[in-house]
Image (tube, rainbow, N blue to C red):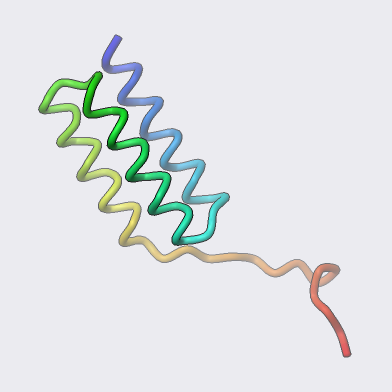
Length: 72
């Protein structure tokens, strides 16, 4: 069961990385880690901390869609 929770936490972090601004993403990571601490083993929690830290270090690239840019 806790393996499924670990996987779900990683998926939440991945989804947030793709869909949130950097500051919001970091806040969400802290929230996920805070809640995961209570349900994961120490080893799994440490894996999740490392995973979240790696994602936080990654640069986010946003694609600008031409129809959404303002032309003057």
